[in-house]
Structures are given as C-alpha cells and as structure tokens.
Image (tube, rainbow, N blue to C red; front, side):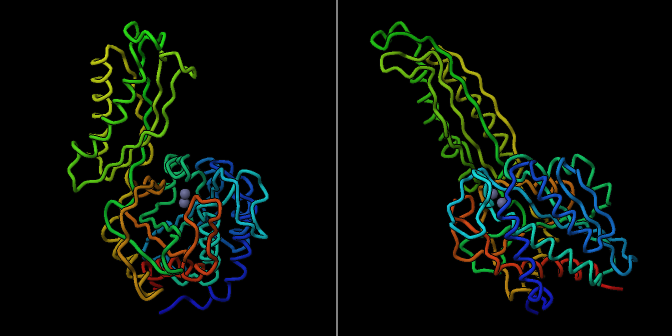
Length: 387
Ligand SMILES: [Zn+2]
Ligand SMILES: [Zn+2]
C-alpha cells in the first residue's frame, strides 16, 4: 500500500500551512503564534478536546475513533520550535523574523501532524483514542519534559507515543528506524581553573591556569580513548576556552572551559561525569591550583522500545515499500522524556538531498508530506483497527 490518496489531495493545503509556519518561526517556548494556529486548526477539524498551555506553550488535541471498545490511547507528537539562525535560503516564503529560522524542519513536522489530525477527525476509522501532541522548545529547552511534568501522559491516559523527524540525505519519503538507544544523551560541563596570575616573564611566581586547562583539554579525550569500552559511544568536546586576561604579557588568574558530552547509555554518562571531575581535580592538584567542575545533565538517551519499533517499521514498509535500519545519532532529542514515560518509537523520514538540519540553507521538503502523514494515520488505523 503506498501513501493514502487523501494526503495526495491534501498536500497543497498542508504545504500552505507549512510555508506559513516557515515564514513565522518562533524559538523555544515562545511559540505563541504557532500554538494559536495549531489550536485554531484543530478546532476547525472538529477535535473532541483541545487544551493549550501544557508545558507552557504546548498544545494537546484529542480525537476519538468511531468506537472505543479497545480502550487504547495513542499519542502522536510533533515539535513546533525554530532556531536562532539567520535564514539564507532566498525562498519566497523565507523567515520574516530576523535571526529566527525553521532550520530543523519542525514547520514540516507540525504541518504533517496537523494533516494527520485533519484526516483522522474526518474519518475516525479506528477503535480507540488519538492524542496529538504539539510541543515547544525541542531545541534545548526541554518542552517535551515540561509537557510530561505537567502530567500529560496520565491526564489523557496515553499508553504509547510515536514521534518523527525529517532526515536530509535520505530519499524523500523513505523511512529509517532502530530499536534501543537511538539519539544520544546531551550533557554540558563548565570548568573553572583557578591559579595565581602574574607577569608572563616570571612564571615561577605564578600558578599558570592556561597550562592546567590545556592539559585538561587533552586529558579529557582519554575518556573516549582509554576509559570507555571501544564498542560503546562517547563524545567529549571542549568548545570554549576563555582566559581571564586578553593581554600577551599576563598569566591569567582564571581559565574557563565549556563543552558537551554525548553518550548512548546511562553507564557511559555516569562514567564521563565522574572522569571529567577526577581528571580536572587531578590536574589542578598536580599544578598547585584549584578547579570547580559543574556538570549539567540535559536530554537523556532516547531509547526506542522493541515492540513499538517493530510495529512502526511495519507501518513504514506499508507506506513507502521499505524501512532501513537507521544509524546511531550523537545529537539529542527531547522526545526521550516521553519515551521514558511510555513505550513508543521515533522514526526518520527522508528529506531528500537538502542542506543538513541547523544549516542556514536548509528547507523542509514538502514532497515528504504524503508519506509522513500516511505513516501517522496508518499507525493509528493499524494499532487500533476499527471494530
Ligand atoms: Zn534541531
Ligand atoms: Zn529537530
């Protein structure tokens, strides 16, 4: 079975919604216009319940099937937020807001889930309940976590959740997925070495923080090369090195390092945190300085559940004739919080040969709409077949 005919018919309308969202990008939790547009559309479609303000600016819509003998409730989630990037696509519907851009395709995700909501509200050809979830702040703000903390899963009795992301470089409308750990945990660290500043020509009178911090930058790489099992994954990247002096003849009193850690398991995450702290305090001790290490845990590892992943892949095969095994992704994904609360699966849909996500020339490919929408609709109709 290829894509559903109804979505081929609706493609122009869904494309227009997508381009309107593209022109009006909003960052993090500031998705006020987007949330209002989503809520308005859900109302037009005749959703049974629409609630705004879940996870600050998140929107939840409920669509009941023709019958509900199964008692099943499935959550379908899309993200709505844009990025603080200056768009350079030159599109006629390019961002009207300077310094904000839909560079991750969340405009497409929102439009596709709206398309599915329209179809499901029209047809209701299933036995159970669908909860459509539109979240803000996927790009680092934890909007998904906040929706969970607001009690969304229990309030609507959601039993399974599904998510989707477009993927540049994959043939448009094709799918890829993997069970188990899929997207990385994303943590940050903030390290301050304190020494004794002084004249650069009299190093013997100083405790040189630049030397200490430089040792640390190199030593932190041994977490991946010497501490981690080579078949596990860990990335430790120092991304900022700032001394407290800009002068060429001063040994700075302080050096500040920042960076990120990406891991694919809780064990590796714990190991990285412990080793960063002990490596830095060891180096500070060796050179006679002191150090403060702050470690911030961001999104957890996003883990696809076996059973739902198998089902999601079957649906993808039905829609587009195949489903590939996706590689591990060292980026993070806020949907991880929803998958910690309920079983579910997250799938990639091809965006064709486009610029990569987060690039100023990226654009969501509207040709992916029929496949993406069909996948959502089939998830519902196959998981909760009409009685
Ligand atoms: Zn992104
Ligand atoms: Zn994204």
